[in-house]
Length: 498
Image (cartoon, rainbow, N blue to C red; front, top):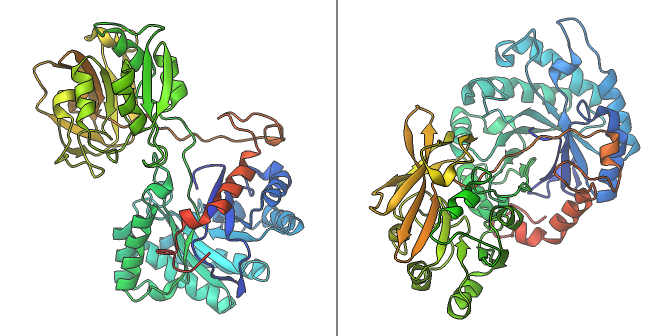
């Protein structure tokens, strides 16, 4: 688990200990450690928000400090708090102990921990998850389906030996790693878990942007191995709340300051936010307003085209998607003197990073795209370019960048990316096109996920959080998810109706 509190969904109405779930929505929370001191307050807020259960670690290292010392005091107290709040718990049996690393090479000790823990709480907890994100190096050093199955198989057999009615969820996979999951099936994992489990994060995009396609891929793998009837749970997901920033803070301002006619208080900039485009594809208006003088306005694609005819804006910032329609009026707008800002997620490549076959804006932007370069990479701004004189530095990012080629004669490279192998590639390009200018970023808009820990004062109603959001957002999230369940989980791909 990566954040302190996070909403999650279960994509199935499977029984919870043979009793149908009346509420399949849960929260992933570290109420056993990071939020230990505020667990009762947190549980009360969750209950108020309509949350159905809590997923949390039952970490081996927090129970057994050496080969002979056991301490269930904290877990016992946590279970009492959950009982008092009438909040079911989904526990995760996870992580290596300091004296037994890696766990799959110390199965005798691991299974002793499993036996003691499951036996202790079996009457209170009907479903047991085995590990968390075992396909990530952060949680399982050198992830390997063979090694994970070596741990999963005896764990499943032991849990069923303790109580055949208990259910075992495979560890929640980070993302939906089809190769990893298929290799588990190929190795014979099918009989050793009752519930498929994934974490279909898609940041920087919201999860629903590609959720149906992602889940269809998972169900196809399950069906290939005769496991299509097994329930599938989503035990972590999330919606990005951090704003989309165009790379380094200040870059827009300084790049725009070098235009033939620099922005001033009379400038009008349109930022494309269109409900027909993927959710979250528009650049954050407040950040753009900080970078550019004048007025910054949100506009749909049709409103932008209408403005070209009636009152042309000084600049247009395209959304981070290839889903907007082709229209030659956008090209004509730049040729006649407009300014266009685009990123790797627009105008040159499709959503898979392949060069566009139609309506590519390569001539306007002064570059062509030759697919994506995987991240991580570092945007490097040096003093060689007057456009960036005040914002030199290095800015790391995780996501792929567009591989650029055929840089035009009127284009200038004003920023580069240092790749993982140390090589440098073009990263930020300005171009003169007719009477207009363009500014192109080969990388995605900056997206950073932040980890915050909250104390008692910070979760009191009315107190602003650091990100900043009111604690009431948890109720808002629950309400939005509930209200939009048909849209988020269409029956066309859900394994069973919610």
